Each structure stands twice: as structure tokens, then as C-alpha cells.
Length: 395
Image 1 (cartoon, rainbow, N blue to C red):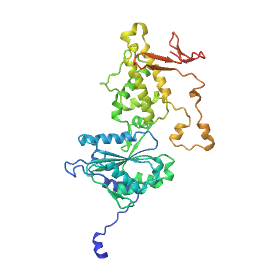
Image 2: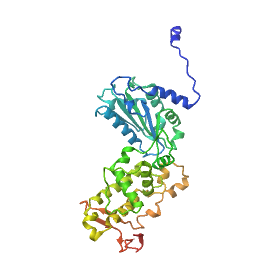
Image 3: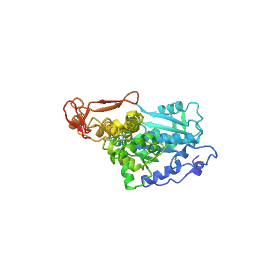
């Protein structure tokens, strides 16, 4: 038998560094788009035609799901609208080969396993140290078996998108998984602040995810950006309305304006989008209100729209700002000494609701009329606290 097996003996390659391993694995993951003729491979929608793509970040809410969603949309368009993705939530409390094989088989259901499919593995940080062997089998060996001998095999038409947040404190206790992920084709999702810095410096980073083009051109981002840009330059807003046909600015300009106005020093994409969507809904109501229409009420309430927009920006910033000093530190997994933890998690004095007045402006259910809460307006346009008589904001 040994003499027969000698015919299949191969010389093992020697790897000296992680980059050698990366290139070796990449050479096996990258697929020829035309290998199956007219049949579509899921890997064709990957930036490098890879059948494995890790989408990671060092914080939550950084746009990983959106990146994978764009991949799914791209494959769906190639498959003539046929659903072509499967979501595998890997959340624990315990992750084994049995659970992964079961999830894969249940999720696929009656789908043809030979068709182009994206398997979206959403891995929770709390199970990161349990998945190294399963990921090795599934992605590198391309087959994983359970305790009963059932085998799941990867096909050439499949793509595995691994969504995972590797937080700072996870690197130590989940080292085997983290080291494995480093060897796989990876896209790093950056924070809006980091993306803005990259764009300002003109640095190109093929492994980094920058601002989503579709989001940038969307009505909610464009409406907010266009109003904020004019607000910053002190341009009159009474006769301005968002035109959905026009796309203004560049990614870097848009981010500079949003980061300056959102009220959070280093927001995640989810925090920034929360600010944008809240302000967008208010601006849309403002555009629809007859009381903010200069052509109708300009003779008696000229300047009202500019005032309303200015106030809504302040209000949106207040809603987007965290009430807890320690919340951002916790999200970033910064190591805070135990004795400082309780002190860090104190309500910010600026946000102590029981001790301060909170002025708000809301459009009513009819979408036209406006309710002012918690402030008075002087003849000069100053906002005044009606209880303490203090100026909230100069007109």
C-alpha cells in the first residue's frame, strides 16, 4: 500500500509569514467567473471574485450588514430576481459542528445547493472563541460534518460572507479565531470619522469599506446634507427645497458636514444614520407644511422656515447624542478601571433631564401645523427658557 501511495506524494510548500498563507488561500478562493459557462457563480459579485469574504469591524454598527446586503442585491440582479442568499445566525450559547450543519441544511431548505448562493454567517462576538474549528472546516476544507456523520459540502457556486465584530477585548480570549480570520480575504468597515480621514488624505485602501454610494445618493442623506451645508454657510433656507434629481457634493464633503453637525465626536454608521433619518423626517414635514411655504405665508411669517430648520438641527443633535459619558467607551471596549466605571456611567450634566429645560419643535400628525414645546421666542428671534428666563440660543 505504501508503495502505491508514493505516486500521490507531493512536496509541501514552505510558508514564512502570514502573507504567504494569505496568498495561498486566496489562490484557492478566487474563482474563474466563466468556469461553469453560463451558470452564475456567487463569487462574481465579490471585489476579487473570492468565494470567501470576511466583513469585519472593531465596533458594532459599522455597516457590515449593509456591505453584505449590497452583495446580495448584486447576486439577485444576476439571478434575474431569484432569491439567492441564506442567513445563518451564529449566536450561541454554544456553537458546534452539529449546530452549524443543522443550520445550513435547514436554511437551504428546498433550494438547489448547486445554484449560486451567498451564505451570510452572522457571528456574535460572544461565541467568537468557539467557531475557529468550524470555520476552518467550512471555509478551508470546504466540508463540515456533524457527530452523526452528516456532511455539508461547499460548491464552487457558493460564497460565504462572514460578518463579525472583533472588539478589542475579544482579541485575547478568541485568539485562534482571530488569527484564522486574518488569513482570509477581508473587508474592514471603518467608522465615518476614519472614512473621512482616509478621503481627506487621499489614501487608497483596497481592504477598507468607505462610504456606500447608494446611501450617499439616497434622499435622506442628500436632503440632510444639502440643508446642513446651506445652514453652515448661513444661506437663507426660506425658499430652498430638496430636489431629488440633484446629487450635490462628494463623499468627503458630505461626511465633513454630517460629522460636524451630528453632535457625536466619533459616531458609528448606525448612530450617524439615526441622526440623518430623524432630521430627514423633520425636514420632509417642513417642506410639506404650508406654514413653512414662503410663497403662502411670506408676508406675515417670513423667515419661519429658516428658524424651524435651525431648531430641528439642534433637536436632532440632541436626540443623537448619548446621555451616558461611558457609553462610547464601552462600545469601543476601552479598558476602564473598575473604580472609575460607576463614575463614567453618570448622566452628563448637559443631559440631566430632570434639572434642565428641553425645547422641542414637532410637526403634528396632519403634517402641516407645528407644536412648540418648552421655549418662548422673543421679537429678536432669541430662544428663551420660560421658567428660568435664560437664553437657550441666540436668534
